[in-house]
Image (cartoon, rainbow, N blue to C red; front, top):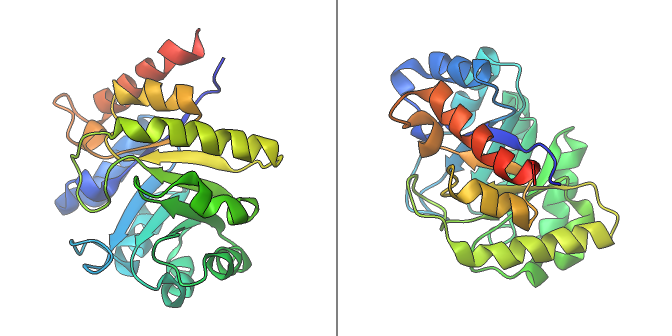
Length: 226
């Protein structure tokens, strides 16, 4: 039986004209974390949000702020995002010049260290630093844009990483980011995912945020009740 998953709505798909209200809606609907996608226009094509938005989110909620840095050379930004109110900071193994140093630096700042990897990056690329991660963020789309389809080929990698963490006695959580909806969440949960980032499935649900959250919770019960 799988454990109750955590759901982290991503504000990437929120209505920024009423961001505080959108965060409150997700919190009232049972969100566990708030996910913030930071993109620099270099590591990924879009430019999205930065420290000012994180600080605004910090004022809007007491939920953990899960900050995903999709940026080149993230080390110089870690302090400023911690100061802005991030609780978790994810850095990409593909972007960090020294991923071990990055993870240790995040923890020294008092934040949970997130180790992120792209869909095409094999599990072996992070094997040596798994013991340093508090959260392992597995991208199930190519980073950059909301609304992409879930890449099913990442499911075996999630299982590999779950086995590796369990074998090391690690308490790190596996977080799945990209294309998560009521259809794909159960698949990723069965593979070993524990935290699920959902942007469009929550903030663009036809019946609203609460209905989007409920659809994800209901989908997870398909697995938990087995």
